[in-house]
Length: 386
Image 1: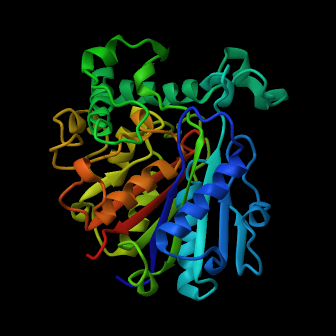
Image 2: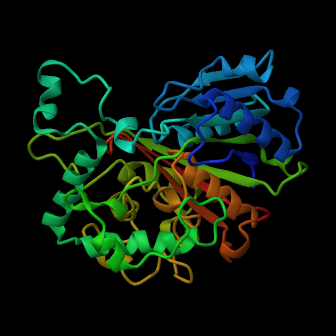
């Protein structure tokens, strides 16, 4: 294992945390990550932040943490792909000698005591584009739910995908969440319960949609050589890739059928020198069950259009041949955008997942998705000591 590695991990309380700001949570996550690695804060010489929907944390987090003379400092925003992009930038900076220990952090507090997920992500109180750019507002398409429903519906109509197949993903991830003490939803879930949950935007049901959570997560990226001498088992960063197709919804576009994963995934695999056949464990961005399904196809785990039949046999669930989102993901554990899959990848890679620990963790594939399938980032990680 050469190059860079994740040496520290920090996760705050997540969920209905109402009495703290995103900046405060971000500072706690970075301090936890540094302590987890066995580093003093003075040894952190790089800081990358990605703001949440409330616009924090920002570069001023440096002052809150009391960091001085940083060699690397930047805000990186690629929406849900941002955390994976940050880690890729940190790993590249480490390999080039631009910094020696880089903290990457995301925090957000979209959830309010009297609010809802709709209020946080596109509902009332948010300004809408004017002129033709706001055409979608006239049909009520003002939340991500509706645009992802359009994508899912196109997949259904083109390939015969069904709601029951999406439900199999939700059921599998809830089975994993039962073993995760940090998960917001741990009660068992049946396919019948999924099918009986209310439609949010046809064909997406309530249990097809991710949680809304407050909280923060951070990692410390350093050289693989240095990481071996620190407090935790290192998780190597073997490869990464990005693709940003934008929201292409014009005539003859592939919206809903092909995503940036089809470009970012192969790039990351090539950099790492592995193929999908080498992947032991998947941590996929699951803002919706549909997103998991289309990412599996675009990464090449099954042919295009066969994602529905691929997921129904339990291969993603505990005991399955391709463990996926082993902490419960954004559907059942918590939603910290692209950091949700990264946190679980690090825990599994270290061999510290307790009852949900998988046996094989040599090569872990992680995805990040931003916007309405507009941004994608992939990481290939190496399990500790492998």
